[in-house]
Length: 299
Image (cartoon, rainbow, N blue to C red; front, side):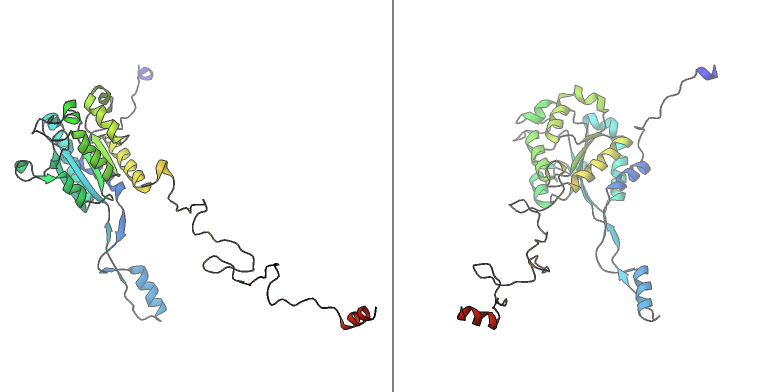
């Protein structure tokens, strides 16, 4: 019967494509005008011409560009093979949205090196320490991987399936997480399956609550979290940034002093020297009338 039919809610974790990925990544952009002034400033030109009695006064300004810098780490091979298509879509969208984008590949876990070209991964490697020295903490780090591997690859020396690593993978992840505070991890596996994978739980403990599913809703949530982490950088528990003096009074406040005005440095404009008894110098002294003095003297 028509009245007996049930309807399901729409799913917010739909399959991704390049277009809606671009829309989600666009929320991370941070524009600023930098470089040579070569773009017409229409508002400034109109104002300058009006102030110049109608004579044309052209005003130029630098181009408006996205200042956000992103490091993208992509897990390839093995259990990531079924997710190649969605990772390609994310990579394509990131390349078109971010002017400053550097990408690197790794397998299962980031160790002491990564690479840019999978065909030359054994000959042209990039040291992870060089990455930390080259790119500052202001770079946003996005890691894409399922974090599914043997726990030995994270916890043991020589636990990697690729080569004999001198340090556990978790040590290298810790160095990256310590240097790059603005970081998120996109996992193509459903979030309901993360708790059943021991290696994923180990990564989550090191990463914190910054792993998000590689779905449309997950990417939007991850980008919002990355923006929030960037705004609150260096402040514990989201405390707004404000410099404070040791005694607890915020800097920049003017101190009200005795007097009628304030100087630019915050001190009172009336700087009168005072004697020890507290009477200002230069103030008139109270003197009795001459008649009173004569009467007092005669008395």
